Length: 580
Image (cartoon, rainbow, N blue to C red; front, top):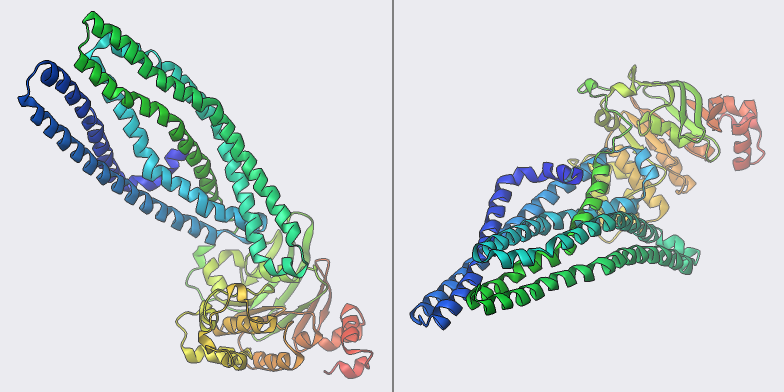
């Protein structure tokens, strides 16, 4: 019932239409009783009573009730379908809003395929329940009640004889619902795993082909696919156990009605017309019983899916919004005050302290896995510090409104992501109202304008998914243009020029120096040429600052930085090269 209560918060907006639709269902259920009654009257009054004049009237009524029932049924089916589409539309919006509000830690531990399973298969199960299962349950219950009531009004003993079988059917239907529920949860979980394998292989298709691992990935998919099939077969075995019993018991109702009713007709306590009425109404008992299994199936599928979607909607971001700073302008002076951070498996950063003023460039260098990207992720509050504090504009970053804080930053991440849009759309992503002139200026600053001009459609060229069709350097320059167009107060460049040639990198560095006034710039790089002009260079190793200073100061220390310099430039005179 928890799942139904949760879904009700979306359905209740349409409760008037829902109640009206169920009232129409009730009307159709009542109309279903008309033709069996009229069929009995034809037998007793027209055939045996020889009242031929009533035949055409009864036939006209039967046709009229049939047409009316069909129109009303079509009407409420459309109504419930419309409600379901509106409910699922709002639910999808809320789910997507929730996904947009979740932090990096959620995406670190959750596979994309699992999220897509929630957005597709689980949503469809909920829509199907709202569009079809709700009214079908109500329709089957009301038809059963109307049929039993009508039967009692015609002949009590025969009705009691038929109903004697129904408690047994109810018992097996209840057992079916209890046994089948866990299997649907397992099916949904396995479907999410299968989705993840497919999503990873589509995204990593080039890697798979590059390593000729197609057979390995096919085998991996086959294993998950077999597991999915096994879960479905497990569910089918439960149906195999109960469905024949339910069908057989439903058939017993007809046998009981014919045998008992036949003896009653012979004894004179029941007319042929009344037996025809019972025979015409036996479907009203059989169908709900036969449908019980399928409806239980739909209900359990809905419960399993609703639990998954609700779980995702109730997931809370670990990053809390400090919205009481909304509206205050953010200054670009930054302070890291004894910052510690852990992902949960050991310290990623330890005792990080430094300050940066507007107009300054802070460069961060160090071996892979030393915590360089983590440092700037903390500044953007993609994660929160474990201990210590990060201050922007003299205030803890936790006090700033998240949207305002991140809007003041322009970031080029190490993993470049471009949307399936035009190049212009990708560059203007952070400032969609920017003019074409501004977009082109940002592209020139990022040394991207020339190669964009050589593309068949120029700035209107559609970029493939994740930038397919562009080189690594081209993607980096488009991402840099996207960041520069925002004209941010804090510019973060995470290994932004690693895929461009030295000459292009030098021109980009000169451009960055010319537009840096009033901005605080963070540069993460492995090349000395990218960081040597910085006001402060931090050398990280194992999450700690092991060296700090300017290019010249670090060369004179003859530590890690000096060692990297010699590897990149050769054994030149350090004192001579310190002025580079």
